[in-house]
Amino acid sequence: MEQNVENNSDVANQLNVSGNHGNIYMGTKSRFSKRFEKLNTEVTSDTKYEGIMDALKHYLTKLDGVDMPTKLQDGGFTEREILTATRRKEQYAKKLEKSKFYESAQWINSQLFAKIKINFEAYVEPLINSGAAKDEILLAVVQNVITPVLALINEEGEHDTFLNYDAEDVFGMIYYLTGKCHINWKNYDSIQPSV
Image (cartoon, rainbow, N blue to C red; front, side):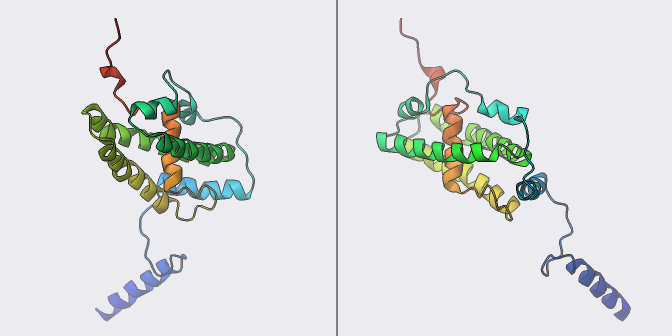
């Protein structure tokens, strides 16, 4: 029995030598984690990527619809809130422009856009469609879109030294998608055409 304890201790010590600072890490890294690591390598070695991935092109493409300020106004946003949203969208757009030269950044952005859109559709659109108050809608955005996306970024990209996205950036992504007509703040299907 004493020998088993000693052998187990040796195995644990060997696992700790791998640089996990005392934590035994027995699982595999996620695709996100691997992409964040690869991004750091791409940036450090200045490995540029030519072109835009199809997955990201989809979200960069403007669909039919009105502009972002009009969509937000239709959703009950005040002029001050629209100015804040515009600033957040523009700040994120600058980061997107800077990061588009790296393949892993394109992949990360496309995956984050997808998560934002799906969470918005699942948790926010039903509130919009039922005529909920704007404050209730914005709370759902924070709880069900911003918070989970930020948690994903902080967990999977804990060693990210390039994107460094924060809550303002995630809001900017939402408004960027709004400007590209991938997200609406009003149920336009319920609007009856004037005769």
